[in-house]
Image 1 (cartoon, rainbow, N blue to C red):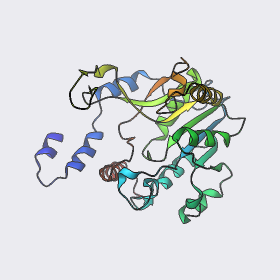
Image 2: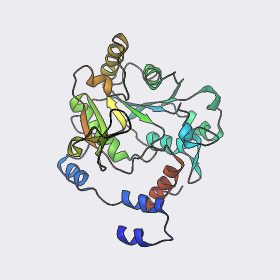
Image 3: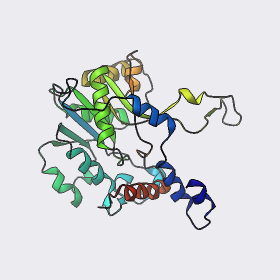
Image 4: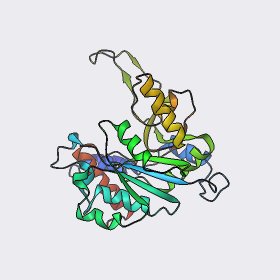
Length: 276
């Protein structure tokens, strides 16, 4: 099938790329087969109180658009609307904190969501870490597991989120990730290859990243006290020497970064039958 697409001159390379997302990757298929199915009412989660922090404060400069990417139209709906509809459909989420700047809170599509008592708002910070801290403060003391999710990943599925929650309940921290497909080269100077990394050990990390709230607070305190650089949420846990479980995700959970990603995302949604 992919060979056929490659040879068809009138088929867009972007559609070919989107088709590639639909082909099961052997490593992912094997890992999912080994993983037990997530069950939100299992003993691991029945006593948990679940929450989510949805980060929608980024500018998305690489998208080269007239507005932040979370407000761009994706099959007729803003990207952020896809996120909110998905998370609010999960009944076990007791609180969803939307981290969003004041200037965007009056957008018409947001108003129906703001009437949901589970939805709270928080301001973005100067850096991602500050935004997460602001969102975490609005979650509330009763939460036992919190999922940190980027609004630029509207294609995540409920199944993937639930499996990540189950892993976090057991291990304290878990992150959605997929095995790396491309060969990765390391370069010290940006000009020449230093070495080729072992692809079998590399994972492409996604969101949500799910942790115990106090573990996340402790991690931020440790990073701030020691002036440690962190690139994602579970990094603060790694820096404390705590384990982070890899939950096998889906390649379709791509991050919308460039205009080409929007075309691929639309193709994936149509392939799922989600057109409205």
